Length: 439
Ligand code: SF4
Image (cartoon, rainbow, N blue to C red):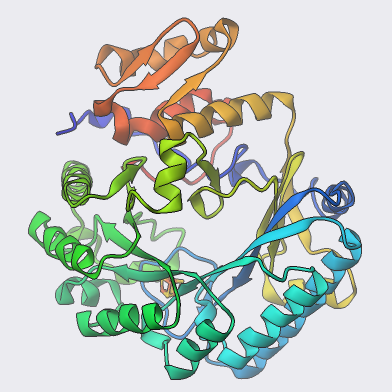
């Protein structure tokens, strides 16, 4: 279906959930820039919140997230106290300005905390940041969902949930350290629907140890039967030298680059044939889902949660390692939970590292976003002339078309989107980062 050119996929590239990417963060941009950015928020600024819960009941071997085991209740309680401190500090800076339209809980697994602790945290956010009526979404680990959680999700009017599923194949679940029978997911889907969750996402994976096309096909068939509104089909990135927990995964059992490519293509074919609309090459949504509608109408964006229809100009990240995006800067909170707690307990903002966005970053970021979200970017002849040479290999192979003022991904070029977008990334020429392969 898609032609395979390994040389064009060889170079690891960012996922471009922001531009500049996190590889460009430095400690020169921290809490003082964050403070100025919050001060610049007006009463008309649309704000989205991201709340990071860096704990999980069980740690999966493949996971690259900033998360730890939820095995000490005292540690979680003091983290939640710190989150409340940070909410208070941010609210003081905002002084009632800004309109919070969305609240996303992610991690880790937000359901690693007690359901009542979630209620209290949400109440604090709604009260201090004037967020009544905001749309609430949450990432959930189906292995630690219980009756109390379903009740709380209903009572707090959570309307969107994302379930970590990865694969339904038992022997692959064993190979990645995440055991969750199909019946468990089926039950979670039914109970979440009953609790009023209108939109479900499944995170699935290809490129897993011992995974073959048939395994992926079976997992996708089960996923389609359970009918989530969205499916994200991520390629597993094996980086055991950077992510110690991945050392438990047998690197010899991983599919090679060509097999990964075939798996990505297989997934695309199955999901689009089942009626899902493709968002990029590895995200899928039912045509009636707001993400698919935004894609069709050219309103998709990228933020740290991936593709989004969220138009808010300001994303405020709360919690250790959470990232905030402002028009002029991107800032990450202190990563270490202990130091994060100390900062916010002292009534300080927790921003530690980041990057300011200058005029060139804005136009380059816009082009990268347009390529990934719409498959086409328009620009001046001068800007295009700076990257024509880098785009040539993609043009020669029929993956990209270049006009005088536009770059368009052709259908065969879809899986090369990140590699094509990286041609516009000014920093990739001289800055090193640890990225994954584009497929
Ligand atoms: S539940 Fe999710 S966040 Fe937690 S370890 Fe597993 S993959 Fe990572």
